[in-house]
Structures are given as structure tokens and as C-alpha cells.
Image 1 (tube, one colour):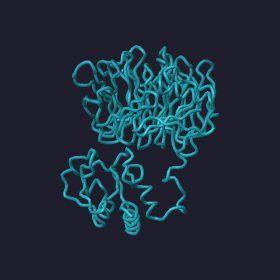
Image 2: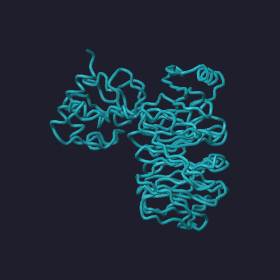
Image 3: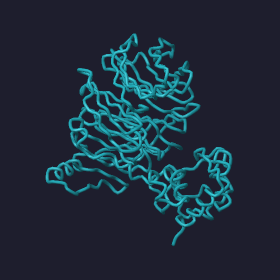
Length: 449
């Protein structure tokens, strides 16, 4: 077992209980620029939970994070792609080694990872949850909370094809293997089929009743697998949508799914931290591994050869397990995250910080690649003034100075009312004593001794 980690300074390895074979594998990673398959590893460096993962055919791993950034990884060495102004939820590799990402800032961005430059392809009217690349990787489909799908051409600057018809948010999207059709899932409980070139509706394939979160299509276009909020994991035949198999466990909801044709496996991740592998050769569950003792599995992706399954959740790292020995390697470490500690272990002020602030903000001088700027030196600081952080224009031009009074107002009214147009999430702390305790905690932990 080896562990890759990176925090700007390059990869480092956990050497505890590591033998000569593993050390040799570690050096091979450094000098070949590749992460070996059939080995457990982690990719560390993000400053927030991992929301999306993709593996490119040439061996790169792409990660989308709550910290507003995309990680482009080769051999454990990340290139940070930064330009989104909110959490990044999805990322895919496309033609020519480019990358497309999307997230909570409503935008779809096309990146050149070598030059670290991006072009804003356009945007939805609400958060974008998932992306799918066409088989030729020249088009990308996006699924959004605005109840639409949009199909973006990467070869020109033509307007996207906009697809409407779902009665609720669109949660996932996939191209057919020939690229002619698009399958979409929605919180309205349906899976629908559309013409990929025109957006015209073709059929309502599945009417599940409960919201459907994730879908995967077989390589021969004969079945579709889906996971729903009620814990359902099912497979339906194509093109008629007739029930084919049911792998529902007593867990809910299903959040992530990926299929690898060569490995003949569907991977399913749920809110209780399990990764279930379904063997599509004989339609049986080949493994059901609890990857984390607390927290969800938000993202799954097979390695190009199908020998590893990459996963992301509450932890700031991406984890990858060999499929052949899934369950014999360590679990995700997110059980140690501070906001999951028992309330008895924290003061009320710390508890308010952990619940409301800790995922986005660090307390020390190092901002740790978080979604928000560090709170170090907060009191007396002008809003929008931390060097190197990309602020909204609202905060950059505001005349707010952070004091006990302004912080109290921020959480009393909520950021969406106190600073309309800022990137801060909509949340309030309604009890005056809770706000007082939070402010006291911040004063103690954000100033120099």
C-alpha cells in the first residue's frame, strides 16, 4: 500500500509499515508520472470535499471539489485549475486533452490544463450537478437544477442545444454509445430520452416515482442502471425500459454510479458510505464495501483499465481501491473531520463554527485551499481583502469591516440578505447566544497570540 499526497510542495509518502516492494512502487510513480493500478492510493491537496471524479484515457485523474477548484493529477502531482466562483460538482476529459468542469456558480468551463487557461462556454440559471462527454468527446451535456439539459459543442462557439421537459431538477445525464441520444435523470422520478442534436423528446423511459440521482448506460446500449433517493438500485432494459434487475439494499439514497465495460462492473455509492460492485456478466453483487463509517460517497469513477475504483466524499482526499481486493484496504478518513465530533467534545462557539463555517474557512494563516478565505486576522479586516482569494464583486466593492457587530448581522440576517450577491451560502444562526458564542470563539482563534 502506498499513499500519495500533495499540498503544493509535491508528493509525499506514508512510510509506516511499508515494505520494499511498496517503496519501489512509490519511486516508479514519481519517475514514470503514473499511478499504478491494482494498488491503494489517495490524492491529497484539495481544501474541501470531493464532488466529482473522472479518469482520462491517457491516465490522468480529474477531481472537482467544494473548494472551488479542479485538480488535474498525474503521478500524484496536481495542476490546480481555478476560476470557478463556487463549488465544482463535475468534471470530464474531452478531445485534445482538454477538460470541462461545472458547478454551483452555474458556469460550464473549458480548460487547457497545460496552460491553466479556461474559457467560459456559458451558463445555466442554477447549479450544474453533472456533466457527460459524447463518445467522440467533442460535445458535453450538462444537467442543472434549472430543470434543463444543455449540450455544448467544443469545436465552435455555437449556442448550446437546450432541452426542457423535466418537472424538477435534472440530476444526471449520459450520451448513448453512438452519441445520437441523451438519457437524463431527474428529481421528478423519471428517466427520459432525447435527440442529442435537436433536443427533441424521444421517450419517457422510466417512471420511478422517487427522485433518481444517477444513471449509467451499457456499452452496447442494451440496459441502463439507475440509483434513486429511496435507496433503489435497478437495471432496466433498452430501449423499452422494462425492469431487468433489482439490487436495492436497505440504505438510502444512492448518490453516485459508474460503469466499466471491460471490467464488467457497475459501482454504486450511497449516503451511508458504501460502495457496491455489481458484476454485469452474471448480474450479482460481487462486493459491498463500507468505504467510510460516516458521510456519503458523492463521486465514483473507474480507472481506465477498470482495475481501480476512485471515490470521493466528505474527506478532502480522493481514495482509490483495487477492485480485486476491495474491502481489504483502509477506509476513508473522514470520520476524523471536526464537524463530526460529538457536541460534548466542543464548546458551543466551536460547535457553531464547525457546523456553519469549517468546510469553507480555515482559522490559521494558511487558507488550505478552502472554498472561502482564511479567517485569520478577521476582526478589523475589510471584507473582500484577503490577497489571492477570488471574491465576488459584491464583497470586493463593499465597505464592510468585520467586527463583532457585522459578524452578528451576517448570521442574524443571513449572507443572502446582509450581502446580496456574495458567494457565501445561505444560512442563519437564529439564537442570539449561539451568535455570541461563535464570535467569542472566532476572536480567540483568529488572532495572533
